[in-house]
Structures are given as structure tokens and as C-alpha cells.
Image (cartoon, rainbow, N blue to C red; front, side):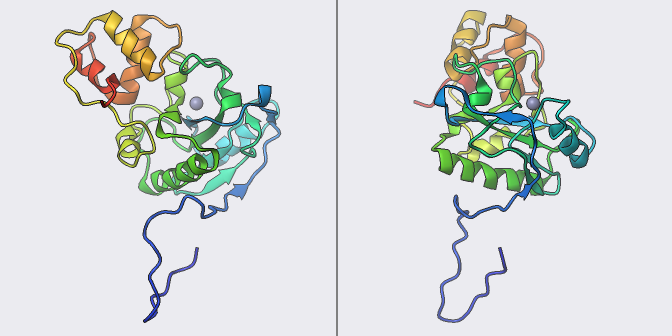
Length: 240
Ligand SMILES: [Zn+2]
């Protein structure tokens, strides 16, 4: 998009980000995709980090037929955007797992990889591009904020991305993910209550208590440690 010139007598362009302006991603096709099964269309967006040292290394792997993995998009740490699979098609990014009791997440989702080895924060240009991309995908497929999840949300214990340094709160404030609950919640935190709340929030995979707690903490309080606390339940209690 070119610079918007302010000319006397004309209106300035709106500062509100558009959901429809094309982002013109760099098309870098991957052979690793298929048809979405059972006529499914995207209702989820799964966010990943690449766990690789560079965007180029990630692109190579995501487009290598021997690797049998892919994603729809890769966002570089400088905000460069690549597209590897058409949104209509089924990319191979999610693998085994479930969310809200639904499996075959690949058939139900768009996968976005963020160039990050997992050990450092996500730079502003990358987060900005991700937010633009999320708005557009959500608009195109009528996906609500509760459809934006992390890989670790749907594959607890098996996957840990986008990791403890991903700024979920930022997405929540911009209504690009479900805002967490802030209610005080119950006085005591029981494992049963926690599991029920986590399941209702979407964490339905059949995993043990510690694995579930770790997955929920990765999303809401990644530096939380030790036994279950009331603060682990509060984010899962929906706004009334
Ligand atoms: Zn992942």
C-alpha cells in the first residue's frame, strides 16, 4: 500500500485496519497438502512457532515433500509474509490432537507459522503482520475470536508452541482471541473443577492433570509453577 497523501479537501484514509485489504503474501507453494475432508471449511486458526533458526530454513522444511509438513502461512520476524498452501486446501500443521472435542484439526483450520526458535519474544513487525492476517482470515471464513488457538492448546503434552513468550493478551485485547476471564472464581481450586472449566474452554484432549495444567498455563500464565492454584481457574471462567 502506498503512502496516503493528505490533500486539502479530501478525506484522510481511515486508520482502522481493513479486513479486506490484500496483504499480498509471497507465494511459495508447498507440495504438502490435500483436500479438506468431509467438506469441512476453516473454523479455527492454529498459531505455531517454527522452532527453527531462520525463516528460510522453515520455508525449506515446510515445502520439502520428504518432511510431510506444511502450513498455510509463515510470518518472518521482520513481518514478511509467505503463503505455502491455499486457504481452501488442507495443510499439514496440526497433527494429532483435539479442540472442543473435534479431531482432524487440519481439515478445520488455517495454520500460521511464526519464525521463532522458541527462545525469544516475537518482534513487533511480526505481531503486527500476524494481527493483519488474522483479521483477514477471520473475515473471509467468519471465524470468531474463540476459533484462534495455539498448537499447544489442541495438542497438550505433545506440542508447546507458540510458547510462553507469545503475547496472547495482545490478541485478546484486539478481539483476535477469546478474552480471558478475570472473575475471582471459586475459593479453592480442585482438579475436577479445573478439568471441567478447561474442557468447557476447549481443552478436551484426554491427558493427565499435570499435562492439562501445563497446557492451560502456557496459554494464560506461562510462568506459573507449582500445584494448581485459584489463578489457574480464573482465566477459564467465561465473562458473564
Ligand atoms: Zn506447531
